Length: 259
Ligand SMILES: Cc1cc2nc3c(=O)[nH]c(=O)nc-3n(C[C@H](O)[C@H](O)[C@H](O)COP(=O)(O)OP(=O)(O)OC[C@H]3O[C@@H](n4cnc5c(N)ncnc54)[C@H](O)[C@@H]3O)c2cc1C
Image (cartoon, rainbow, N blue to C red; front, side):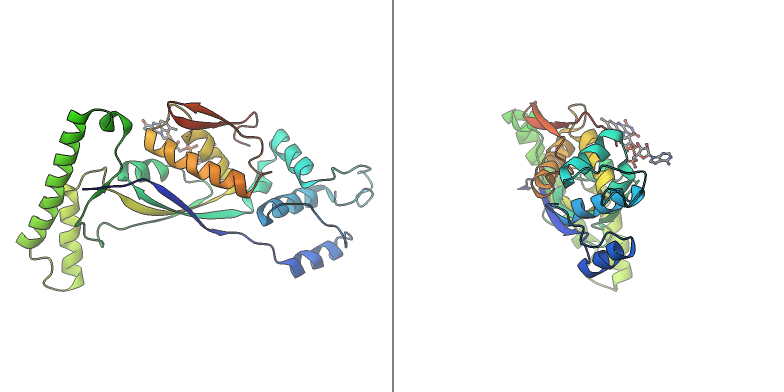
């Protein structure tokens, strides 16, 4: 058994097309408008937000005599009034690695605004089993011994079954059929990888739900890492979050829940 730690990689993000944005601003009479946004995700949310009221400059819409100046002011208001749909335009792309199927079962329950590509254990044959060990198991040497022994036994079982079924022989269809049969005897705690993308609105909801002390330890750990990463990269979009440590893990809270 290989002991693992869950990992989060941000592998993609929506970006602005500067010449397209410039042409759009000219089209709506807002040529020369610029933003102090720290990231493209924050710039896009601001542009879409301002586009609703033509609030790039005072007077562009005769009903608007004052506009909020900075990106932080504008998005702060968006979060405060719950105008969350403008946060849906930017999508962030993650690879979440060395997590259990316990974690992935929970993650895929979040459907709105997400995209998922999960490692197939029908195609990928298990040999060495990785596992993240929950605190309650790690804290007790006796229980840890049972955990490791059982995992090792299941690891041996995968190799033994592969030999008995002669998986290596035959075409890929046969391999797939046998690999899928064998995975039924793998533990739910086996480490795997999942690709997960979410728009910023959906991501905020999942961070709030899954860092909550009532959520499971592994998903709390992973979304604590996600929150840390996005707070550093998109300081305004997640700038209303406050972190509190509960049971050794960070709980991200906001007065603007589920915008
Ligand atoms: C602590 C905890 C314990 C849990 N325990 C269990 C459990 O024991 N058993 C179990 O089955 N699940 C459990 N879940 C999963 C939970 O029921 C949800 O399926 C999961 O949290 C997904 O969140 P969501 O429903 O907000 O969906 P998301 O897909 O994240 O959607 C976000 C929001 O969009 C809206 N939305 C999404 N889809 C629709 C729709 N079809 N119609 C209308 N509005 C929609 C809702 O407002 C929703 O909250 C648990 C979750 C947590 C956080």
